[in-house]
Image (tube, rainbow, N blue to C red; front, side, top):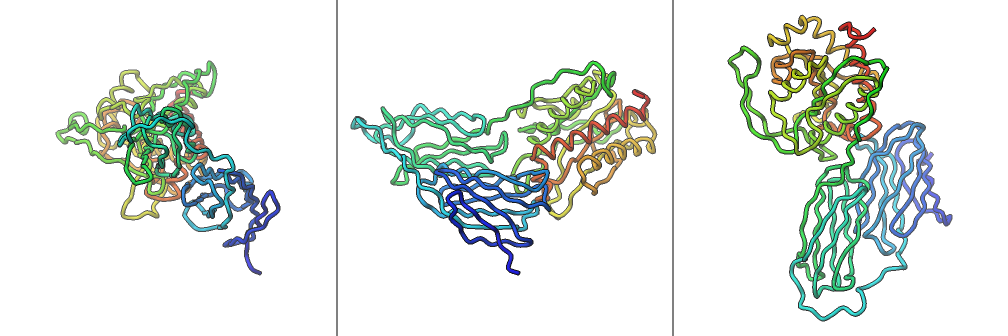
Length: 438
């Protein structure tokens, strides 16, 4: 039997589609600047959706408990009946279903404002204000003598090409919705005239709405336990050389790089901060007292400082959040928990066998909540923060950003929540092992 997508428009027009695998039900509704879709794929929990026209292109990950996925293709730059390619993939990049349909024309396109004065054409935008807002980018600039420009907005996940027309006094202002762009990612805006003259080029970080500090529970499983959460890296690294461990002669010098998403192009420091602040709140909701080493991307925290902070508050545990990278093999994935090995501070905390048990306990809790079966607990002398900590310290590599599937999952709120719940459960089990709670 020939495999196909069943495609039904709100106007009951049918378009041909191709599908791989089992028969797929796909329903779409076409409107100016938007295409709403619903697709039923019961064998998947997450899918990767991509769409493109001549002026709009984006990809995003969707989640569904029961395989009923729905979303919207936002087409701010598509004003006529252009062809739209709509593709559905697994998180490993395997095509599930693809179709081509026709976008709706915008009947309300307006030209330049009436009564514009005759001014000499400017070659650069004036009074430029670019502001990241929730879900998009707001812009304002003045460009004397230019009736229209082409504005391009680009992030690693999407781009849009929009023709703008001058308002009164040659002012251009508005907002470009960029719902597929991840928080804190770089968004570049350029504007060119019809003749190809670049009149504007600006870059900003996409809006990041950090979770507000939650209230500490008065009674919960972790009441009386103190945890330090250490989101690894920061936007800009400062080079420093420090002793690798107390009493040793070896030193460690900061490495400039960090993991970067093979598909999302996100930086490791973004993910560790996002997940770290969610973890802080989840631990506090369980009654724990929690400190974090940084709450912003632009806060630099040195290697020794990452141990000094939990040491100064006499924390019971330190969770150091990181994301892994293996450029030589993009198939490698899994969670890894690193514990200190030879440090005198670590030896005072627990015997090696006990440290191994604690690290394995954290790993198994995270695997239970995420469903990730691959992983390992490793003891070594590599990590300064672990070596200088006076309490159980765990450097947690939450997944491989060089693996497409894990890269996409690490940025999705549902999977981030699973990582957080796994680490909270890990702390609860560790606290019981250490006799801190019943």
